[in-house]
Amino acid sequence: MSFDLNSLLRAHILRLQPYTSARDEYTGKEGVFLDANENPFGSITSEDFNRYPDPYQSALKEEISKIKGVRPSQIFLGNGSDEAIDLLYRAFCNPGKDNVILLPPTYGMYEVSAHINDVEIRKVSLTTDFQLQPQKILEAADANSKILFICSPNNPSGNKMKRADILFLLEKFPGLVVVDEAYIDFSDEPSFTTELSRFPNLLVMQTFSKAWGLASLRLGMAFGSEDLIRILNKIKPPYNISGLTQETVLSAIKDKAKVDRMIRDILSERDFLHEELEKFPFVQKIHPSHANFLLVQIPNANRVYDDLIEEKVIVRNRAKVLLCVDCLRITVGTREENKALLKALSKVCS
Ligand SMILES: *Cc1c(COP(=O)(O)O)cnc(C)c1O
Picture 1 (cartoon, rainbow, N blue to C red):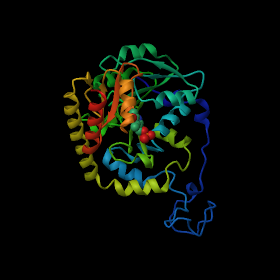
Picture 2: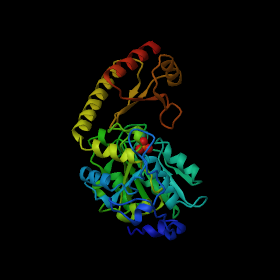
Picture 3: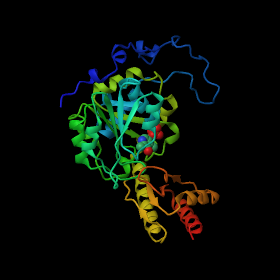
Picture 4: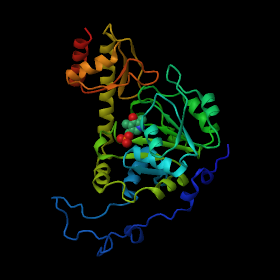
């Protein structure tokens, strides 16, 4: 279908003149820098942080481009994926007028961010086996439906969505389709970044918080058309990614072998945890996972959750979430942590 990004955009964002930072006007590395009111003597810390970082994270995007097979101009970097989610709302959704479509049970930030931005939410639940209902999603949409959030592999259920369903929605949905791939590294599913050239309404989100083990640094990625990425860059806070984060990730990203090793270890621990949980007679269901967690159904999950805390084992209680009755979401830990979880669980459930 024909897709016009500018007509989807809020009118004042289309007109907006972005902030131009001191470093936009002169990009050379050599010189006497008296343009940004920085401290010329250095920092209070042993390492120097006195200069503002690159607002466009060019060096980092160059490296990410290589491992993701996406041009640097198609990459947006945010202070966590959560920043990209918020910027999408602010760019496309007129408060009190536009709406977004959410597919519960799913990641909570889509909803919180909608509330923060005073944007109407239309919910179309997943099926009981956590798959999409494409026809119902289209029926829920109207001319003011600006964004559809699809999380695949999905949090908290752990499954991946059928690729054909996502492709169908990319063809038919009138607004942007966000495919949140925070857990893609734990799945055998290829990324939707390969579909970017076909679908100008697609935005793929990934993160350094999970497989890369960098949750504390706060670095999320979004991949989309150059026009879409330009919009996010235009409205982001100029220095949204700290220099420390840029430099740390830039040097870490070269050790792709270590990430692959960690992913392998997590997947083998996921198998271990699954096998051991299956042996417990009280475990009703372990949902198949393409992520680094397992959604597990256990009778009286609320009580079990509290009792586990008494044992100093903290899992995520999803028992009150739609389609997740009596479910706990358990992150895959180290062998030692998984054994501690199993021991505590067998104690509080016997
Ligand atoms: C963890 C997670 C993220 C990552 O968020 P960051 O802000 O990048 O840490 C994004 N989406 C989903 C579904 C997640 O579970």
